[in-house]
Length: 476
Image 1 (cartoon, rainbow, N blue to C red):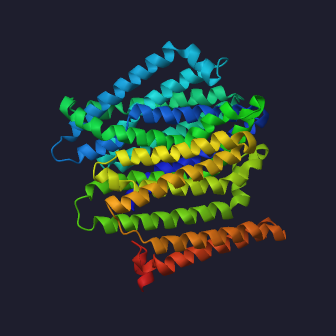
Image 2: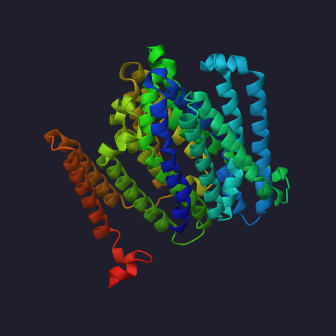
Image 3: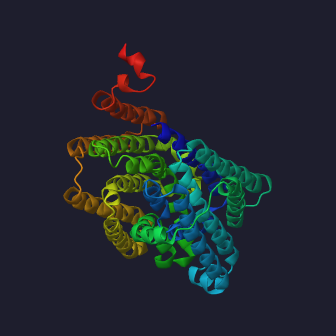
């Protein structure tokens, strides 16, 4: 809980602060310009390339640094050598073939967009390993401070350029990102100078055998998140409207990203603990409990977003709100992704990461099929449902195979009950506006539904007396 709270500061609070950029962009970049769609598309490519460049080495670092046979600094040095080499090759390729690349991706008139973001993603890849090492060292404060500093700089410069200087082109979104990422990279130099660098070729061979399935898993996983935004301009029949439609979808998805924040904060804290606890006798009960409470609180977050949508809709500009209906669908997909992440540890702990690669690839193929077939007819609605289909496939496969290979006693009845209650309350929240009682009445009713869910959590699984610090007051 302590680590999750600190990492949550950099993830949840940080992403929430980044929400300030959504109304900024959607107000200053008109829907008709398609600039927000360009941003959505380019950042989708960035996310995919980042996975390729890190090569699954973040998880690999945890796995081998926790092995008593290896020196943590040697593991870190070897991982950095791999990522640094991949990054150098990537930059040489991009700048050597910028013309053909920009033509294929549809940015012939603006290759500078791709040039800037290539440098950004290269620096992000190099930063990912030191950030992971901070997590291994349990230096959560340092981790959170650097993450929040980046966000503060990013927001400040965006406000300065867009509001003060009146620079409203998507060019400045990428330029500001380049400045902020470069500054954070410089702050890692003191940490890197303290490392006793030592490359181990034999260790690298063992790392590769562990990491390449994680790479496949990561590629498939990130494609489940961004493939729709990459595919959309390629298959949407009206090319002049493709970036406009993608801008609507990309802005509305930002509201749904609260689920990704929770999952990321949970992952930052949980992943190191899982490997450290892998030898304990009570590990399976621990993993089962973690799954249960993860699902409980993500479902609560889902209800809060759906219930308070009359207020949250103002995060995005009025022109973009026509796509708000996709938010619950995308959030459901994110919950499935989080559950899949929890289920994934059974094969990581027994060094059978190839299973994760197959599960994620299966989900990715389903997502690709849904998007390619249905985007031309249903636009961004196909993107939202494609995520549900893709994550749902990977989640079910991981659970079914995992219970045979390395069974964990998940409390399935409890989980199903929480899902059923959430669905029931969501239907009630969705139906209430039909009576047209007004926004205040809708919010009051929706909040009541949320409180019903919270009451059930407290009564069944989280007695107030069991909470740290404040629990002593309820015991009285």
